[in-house]
Image 1: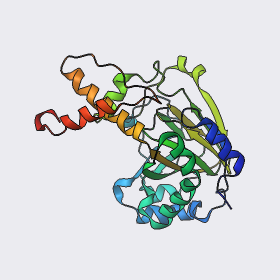
Image 2 (image 1 turned 90 degrees about the vertical axis):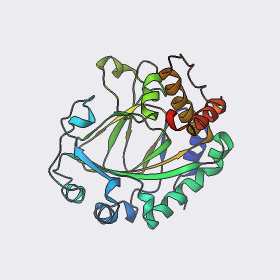
Image 3 (image 1 turned 60 degrees about the horizontal axis):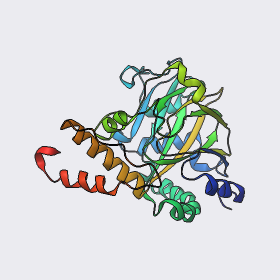
Length: 281
């Protein structure tokens, strides 16, 4: 049985790549997505791919350096997630063969739809989020295309238009792609611009490239699987932002990268050429 039923595939085809959408899936009771499976997975993952922090009663816009520590290891946090008031991220879980196979199987179902619009898929990655009740994930953007599959609990993701210039401008992207962080400040005036989408087990959200979003878990522990990929457009655009950052450092005022379906190949090639010059890296 396909993970994404036909109506969700049709919807995805209609909205990809620039519009967020609510999808259905068949992963809600998958044995790799139980809490016990999360403890086992985290215990065998590389340390640098584990992340956790306090996430309940933390205001939007809190800098990542000021997020509270819970005094636990990542495995302990998962084991105590009901009461830990925390958020856990398991990054690049495709390092584990079973989860790599799951990622390939799911994305393989929609690969032809993706390739027809944005070309071959690159840099496939898989992540898992485990969150305490009422946990908040701070406002941020993803540098990849993303489908978030809800396996346990419910949450609401509030999305903003991709590359919304009032929230996330060119200077932010240039700093991010030159080594900055992807979390954003918060202004209450932005709230009305958001599109809240609630998901429960068996539901998913397609998150477009560059779309800022924040997440609030409801009253039960949440487990979500995030599958991401890049395209030639997203890779070239990342290079273009890096190139613009270098040009701005030289006192120039570069234009913004072209929006999709435009290409940013020349700036991408320019960045790659400068990377070969040691003192300009």
